[in-house]
Length: 257
Length: 224
Image (cartoon, rainbow over all chains, first blue to last red):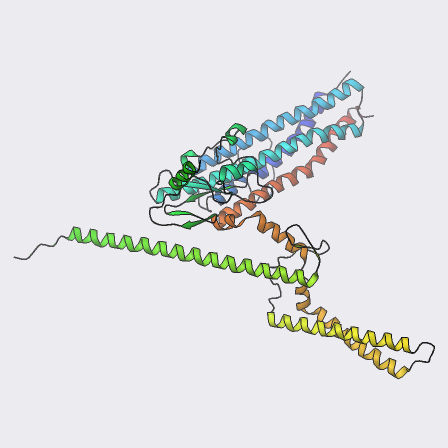
């Protein structure tokens, strides 16, 4: 049985591509788009990943190194979106083509059902990409700010911690890996101890932390702890000259365990 | 012979002294700023709690699992902010006026009821009724006026807004508020809005894709 013509497939592909290109433009802004089509628009998106990066860097003009990092992060996000776009195109076309070939024709309801199912899967995936990549970009921006402040005070490897948004939705990994056992005091790390890639379940269970967060849409924010500072009732507070929070937490943990 | 002066040592001593004083001033300033910030936030929390308690007592409505009043019929407003900017004394006066008016209406109604009960089967004194109705009308007007006042509006603080505010406070816990810079807080809320915008854009365009596919299949004669 004859399926969809190659011309028909191209039209379906371009319709799906348009959706993905628009979404990618809204997320990445006028960044290098792999699509050859030109997007005509009178205004750009107000909030993109680049905006988030600068915002997390305390609204500072990024230097050349930071711009390169941002380009890399945007490139990664774009690759994820491109791969999802190609997969969605082939899934939708294959599902419709298969239905036509097996039954001879397709009803409008069936078209809606197939497109809804396939686009629904892609929507979930797109949300995951958006959430995960925005978390990563936000925390990388914060990390850049931390490194700059660390440089200014002469610390090559600053002490950092994650501020956890503590509510009903906070996951157990954020609580366990970003806080001490009292679930209040932030756990501190050397900057070099923090990973910069997505964590696997095994990593999370092993107590690893990353600038990409513990999971997609992780709301925990990376913050620097200045020398002499520690925590009082979960809030950063001046303890005294020479106070080493990392050392005291490690001693506390080893003494407690 | 005059003793030679070691300017370098003097400079270094002065510099060390200066650096120490700068550091000390910085620490003191930081500590002071932090303490003031903590005091402010505590005062704000106390005020919020008092406002919530007052509103709960005034309404006697349902409360949720967190002890916050629930009224889904009302729209959202932050109770910590008083849009009227009204003086508490004025509000108390309004409340008192409102209470007085309500009790006056109650007493007049009771009087009317008793009059009607007494005069069952008899002819009513029209002058007495007229007077009573006039005073009842005045009392009603008092209540009406005070209900227009900002005091009453304030006492009818929309509880749904309070619930939302509580959720926000809960969501962004105290340690988050204290430990994250403004830019970091803004970045987190921007992240949420970016994700929302992307998903809205997706939803708006998904229907277009279905329409385009239906058109193509229809044009090629594949649809039933």
